[in-house]
Image (cartoon, rainbow, N blue to C red):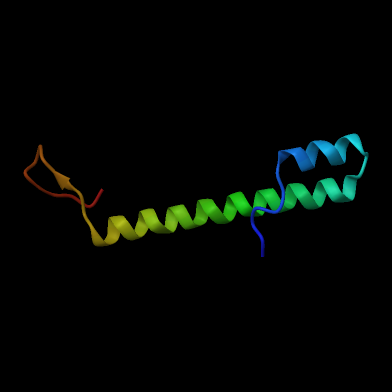
Length: 65
């Protein structure tokens, strides 16, 4: 799946050309791409927290945040 297939220019072009199906496909493609990226970022963040607990300097101990 090509996650960078569509961009904002495609959306605008489809609106101007009055092509609702193509607009919908481009919008869905962009939304899925952004959602997929956000999920991957969150998975990475969770993994970092699980395996690298942060050090709380004020309490001079480790915290799980």
